[in-house]
Image (cartoon, rainbow over all chains, first blue to last red; front, side, top):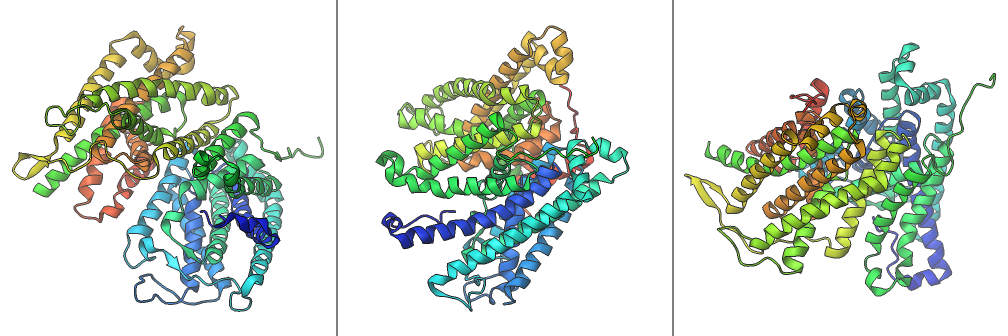
Amino acid sequence: MDFLIIENSYLLLTATGVMNWFVGFLTTFAIFAIMALALNIQWGFTGIFNFGVVSFFMVGAYTSALFTIGPPGEYENYIMGFELPILFGWFAAMITSGIVALLIGLPTLRLQRDFLAIATIGIAAILRAVALSTEGFVNRARGMNGIPRILGDVVSGPDYKWVLLAITLTTLVIVYLLVEKITASPWGRVLRSIRENEETTKSVGKDTVNYRMQAFVLGAMIMGLGGAIWAHRMTSIDPEAFNDLFGTFLIWTMVMVGGNGSNKGAVMGAFLCCTFWFGFPLIQESLPDILGNKVFQLREISIGVLIILFLLYKPNGVIPEKPKISRHL
Amino acid sequence: MEEILQLVVFGIVIGSIIGLGSMGLTLSYGITKFANFAHGDIMSLAMYIAYFIVVDLGLMGPTVFSLSFGWGMFLAIAVTIILLAIFSIAIDKLIYKKLRRDKSNIVTMAIASLGVGIIIRAVVTMFWGPFARNFVPGIHEAVPITGNILIKPDQIFIIALTIVVTIVMYYLLYHTKLGKAMRATADNPDLAAVSGININNILAYTWAITGALTAVAGIMLGIQAQVYINLGFNLLLPMFAAVILGGIGNPWGALIGGFVVAISSEVSTAWIATGYKPAVPFVILIIMLIVRPRGIFGSNI
């Protein structure tokens, strides 16, 4: 996903160039922060080992695209294309992602943690295979092109980026407040107790599988929303773009770097990882030639090293979850 | 019927690769208890090490028997086995050992292994680029077994090598002291430790054997298909399916599981589109996880 690459690096030397890059960067950060908050509900609070984040990212993006895009043209072949308002697309994306999560969760959420990871990473591969191989479904490898922009018919030109930034940041704030509220509620407390010890939670009469399902579906719906915003921001998506590195591993890194079970941590982790991931190619110019054209591989190596270092030396992340103990103690 | 038989033959070839790969995966899974998501990428690494030896260093030599490659490939297999055995031990000592000591759960180790996989993929791409390569360019002719059922000499080599490796593994696990200690450790590490088995040594040997099996499986994959970085990762799911089918920690179960997964995937293409082939191992995996997560043969070796 190298859309933030500056085609001519001298553009960065101008004030407008810097500004453009920075606005685009913040928009991307906001979307990834939403994804990280969603994964934090699943993994950070509940301990659901979802290695298929990209599945819901993809389902959300495609659903919103299919509902809002126009009918297929001569060389295109996809279902729907209803030209509905984008807000409706977002809504549909959340519902569809939630339903997909429910279907995935029914057979898999009872599994032990590492089995769940294997199953979810498998589902991501299958969804990609279905999108790539099914004729007349989502336009196969050609992908969906010309997805409408959010408020694209109202604002256009160079000011548009500010509108998009405002919308994504607002969505992030709403999602953050919502997640913060529900994870601090008694419901969130049950989730944390499942994470710490599922057997004990069961013993006090909580239907833990049901709670895990609720957390899984809620997280997936928010991931779907993130995917929907992504689709309208990119305006074209294709199955290959939703790979495990970009759509799953990067988001996991955000949560691990930020701190499991801490919403502030998830947002912070998203910011740090986005800075690292999208800022890294900017060093290309300062690298010797032999390394300069390997900048993307260097970036992947660095992010791999980064997560391993965090797991080894800072397993609680930069903003660890505050231990919540009863105030009567 | 002939079409099905041809697919079964092809499935046996792919099954040999998946089977040996799963054997390595299940041994380390059984003893360390975490799912190694880097396993597929280490298989890819194996084919690139072999590629480096036979092509970049030009050590292939003239072709032997009716195979598409020369004696250099045998040398490459031997060298890669040694290198990957060392590599696997090193990764364990560098990363997984500390995570074990910190009592991190299996999940943390699984995420770390995914990180290792990503690093391997990026390093390989850095040196050899993202495009597929071949050990030997050109098309290699297949010969008939009976009637219209064809097999390539290279594929016969793959099956033969699998049989040899399986015999060596059998000897190692059942007729050496090391094998006995490994089986005891996989069964119950604490009990093995109080019986005077040095768990750390056993762990290192297990990783070495895993690395060796991965090397053979990876190079066979490169011979059968192409030398391409994504191939190993794409086999990760079939390998996990084979491991769980055979019972975690059970190498024979994993080998048989590999054949079951590969043959059913290949034969399925007689009815469904090839694009959906990756779904077959997944369906097997899910059914096994729900119905019998201990595997058909159980986890005891």
